[in-house]
Length: 240
Image (cartoon, rainbow, N blue to C red; front, top):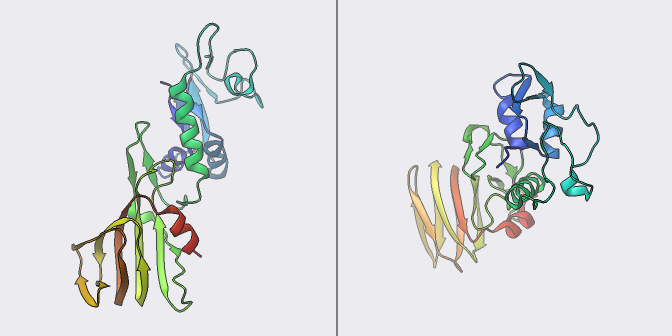
C-alpha cells in the first residue's frame, strides 16, 4: 500500500520547524496537503530508489492528472511508478484511503486549527493544548459557550468527540444520542427530572439517549465529550 500524505501530515511536520519533507517516491499527496505545504513553506522531496539525490515531488509532470482518475492510459506518475499497470485492476484500497482523506480534509465538522497526527491505519492523536474552540449558539446571545469537534465525519462516522467550555451560564438540551462527559477543570452541573448533579475535575457523566437535561455552570468549566451516534448535524446547526 502506497503512503498517503494529507494536510494534517504536512502541518504536523511543519511544527518541527523544517522547510522540506522527504516522502517515498510512490507516495500519494492529497490536494489539501499540497495547499498546506504552500502555505507553510514546506517543499516535498522524493527519494528515487537507488539514487543519491532527491527531487521536488511532482516536478516530472507538472499539471498532469493521475491516469487512474482521468481515464487516460496507464503511464508513469511522479516517483517513476504507476497507479494502474496494464492488465491490472485499480488498487481499491488506495483509492478508498485517498477518498477518505480528501473527505476528511473538506469536512466542516472539525476545523484544522489544531495539531492532529494520523496514522494510515486510522489511529489519531490530537494535541489538546493546540485546540481553539468555536462559539456555540445556545439561543441566548449572552451565553459564553465554546465547542470544537476533534474528528471529522470521514475519520469517525459513528462517534463524535471534542471539547466544550461554559462560563457562568446554563441552557436546556435534548439528546437523541448517548453522551459521556469527562470534566477537565471547573464544575459542571446537569439537571434532569428536577434534580441537579454536580461533577468536578476527573468526574464522568453518562447521559442516556432521549434525555431532557439542562447544562449548568456557576463559574467556568471545560470538559471532553464523546457521543454515539455522532451528532454532527445538531452541532453544525447550533454552532454560530
